[in-house]
Structure formats: structure tokens, C-alpha cells
Length: 246
Picture 1 (tube, one colour):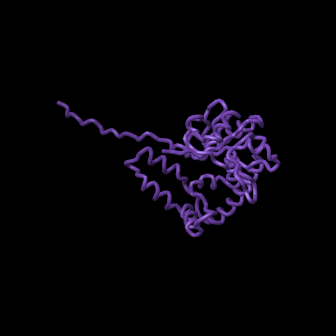
Picture 2 (cartoon, one colour):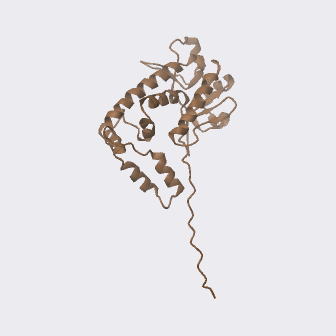
Picture 3 (spheres, one colour):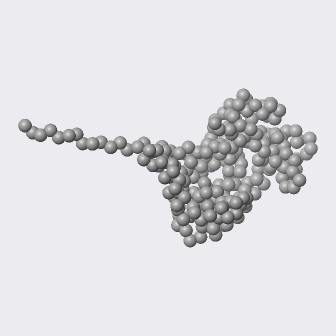
């Protein structure tokens, strides 16, 4: 009789898990009536279905009249520079100034980053390591992913600089992928992010946000959100919210 052979061992390839985007700040389109309720109660979960607090990040228009201040949400006083608020009608917000300021600031930051990492090789961004961990948690633990990411010379250069200055002016290691895309891409990314942040809730209740943590999906989101923002009437009220996660 022919010998029986043992069945060949099968190996299972872990399914690829795409890392989700980090959403800390959201821009919400609200009606005039709802804006008044939000300004007095801050009950965002009840009225908008999101858990968070108002985020004073918009610049109020420098040409605003005193009687128009009541139309702005959570307006803050400022000794110098622009006055900040959490939102209001687009016509009363200095969106152009915010975009320009973010672009200039990011351009300077990228030039500085270029000097800090000079001589180092292009590094693999964190989402790639995170994706590998999420796809195979037991075979590729988080500690291993973090250690391998941090061992890259370019990441070490950024972390060493941050350790030395310890405070404002630190280079965000999480923005490595954006930095490596070049000065123009980095500046334009922050110029659009200043207006659209991490996610956008439209008038119709549709939520726009990146499909993943990778820079390519962030670009796709910002392109959609910026086009949507440009299509809104100047009377539309915007409201910036810092989300609270469990």
C-alpha cells in the first residue's frame, strides 16, 4: 500500500489593518439658531452628536464692528495680535490671514527641520510601523514597532533636537512623512489644515476625514474639505471643536 503522507502545513497570512487617522479637532457647519444654543450651553453631544468642547482657533476679522462680536462663538480677548474665537459667520472670520500665517510659519519650520536632519537618510514614517503592528500584534509587538521607528537616524536627529530645546519650537516626529514631502507640500498642508483641521462635518451632516493615518489620505481629505469650504456662503457659521475621546 502506498504510504500516507501528512497534509502540508498551512500558514495564515495576517490581514492587513490600515491605521485609523487621529482626529482631535473638527470643524462643524451649524445654523444661526444652533450657534446661539451652543454658545450658551456647550452641550455638543446633545445638539451635534459629538463629545467635545469649543476650540478658539479662528481669527476674528480685524474689520469687525463691536455690534458683530455677539455673532462670534467663544470670542477671546487679546492684548496683541488677532482675537481668537471658536467660530461664527465666515464673513467675520479672517480665514485668509489664518491660511497665510500657517503657510509662512510652516515654511520657516521646514527650513529649520532641513538643517536639523541634514546628512540623514529618508526615514520610514510611523504609520508604516503601526500598520505592521496592527496587522500582527503578537508577531510584531508595539514595543518592537516603536523601537524600530526610533532607531532611524532621521528620527533620532529630530528627537535629539526636541530633547535639547524642550518646549516651543519642537519638531513633531508624527509629521515626519509631511516633512519629507518637501517644503512646499509641508507649508500647503499646514495652510489647509489651519482651516479644515482633522475632520469636517458638513451642513448635511456628512463627516469628512482622512481614510487612514497616511499622508496621502490626509491630502485627499484636505482637498475635499478645502473645496467644500470654498463653496459655502459667507453667512455660513463654522464652529471648531476639540473632540474628547474615551
